[in-house]
Image 1 (cartoon, one colour):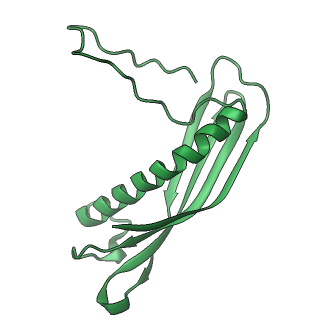
Image 2 (cartoon, one colour):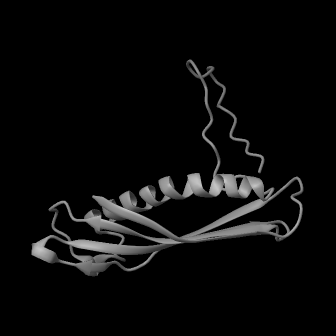
Length: 144
């Protein structure tokens, strides 16, 4: 269970006016957890970093760093397996942690990049009411 999230750094820069086409590259990383076991309950803190670069050519960047706290819910957990892609428990925790981070980063960064004249860092979901038209896929186009 997520116990806390702290954003410690938000840095952004826009180099030039945005043209028609912009490539957006994301580098998201989770650090190795710092484990604490008071009363036998596993608590850990994980540092994170999201670095988004707007290119074609170099248009700007956004860097967000912070940490997130997690408390074990009782599942057997071997933190030494943090980088093992086969460990289901660790993968479930990483998924929960990463999604919680994104849920907290997006509201902070969206107005920032908008004010800087950069395109949205993340594609907004497509909305379609009713059933999909037969034989026609919803548009996947994204202008950013």
